[in-house]
Length: 159
Image (cartoon, rainbow, N blue to C red):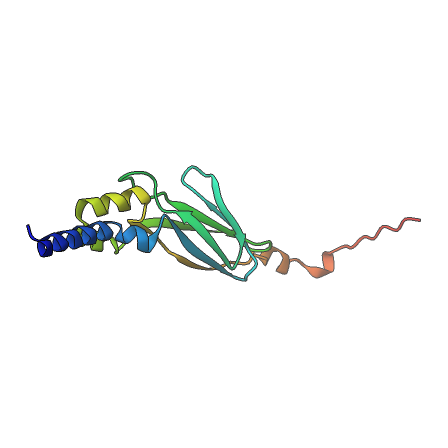
């Protein structure tokens, strides 16, 4: 093997190793999910499949969620609960989907690339990654149908 062939082999090997980490580099171990509500300033709690709280915030919020769940295991599912006084609580499922960047590793990195993405969780993305939730006001029908003439108001005065 001459010097030119050796350099070519080193370049190819380096390219394959770099490509095998392509998705892990592009996507990372964690992902961000943006959560917005109408009205804003609602409390957000994100829970994992075990019911453990993994993130909290006030809308608009951005939470960081773990992508991986172990080597060749599906990523965890999350649930976002959005609530504000005077409004019904809303629940949104955040489910894992296969990250399209995995195709780059399958074609360029082969088995080492897919294994690296599986180990880091980079082979997964979450849907939705941008939540826009409208909150529904509590039903005030009971109060609006009350006969106002039958309401009694009492005031207590103390010395």
